[in-house]
Length: 164
Image (cartoon, rainbow, N blue to C red; front, top):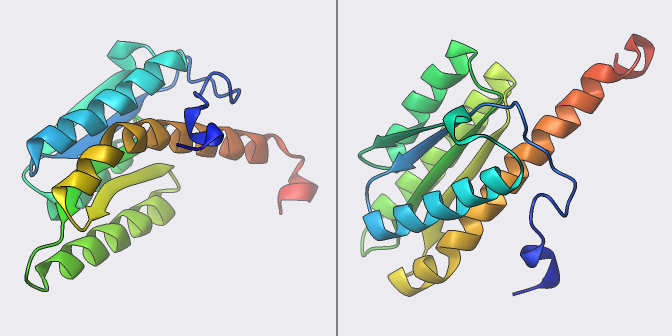
């Protein structure tokens, strides 16, 4: 593990106090999903996000994540969203469809609603890769969404002449 992966949100200057987060987790590959959620929530809590400001929704699989992300975005009740799940390559083309379509949908929702969404849907060759990445990927998802919120806040504080 590299040194920059060991840095927590608080060491990176990321503060989530007073921010609200929605997490949407796929129930497919449940042990991997649990590790993703654990790493993510632990990191959000380290960045001063209150537990009651984190709402977790579970859905059957990765392709269902985007619908709930869209609903949460439209609600206006969240500062950032996080997609968590795991797709492990199988013997069919289904892997590519799920990976590509879930990523595309998340990107479209983020751009349409202008809300930061961290995409931490693991796409791995096997379960061993997924297990070794899950907690750290959950942690990184929390860091990504916190950083993106801070960048947006900085942009909104710019004088109109600079941000136009």
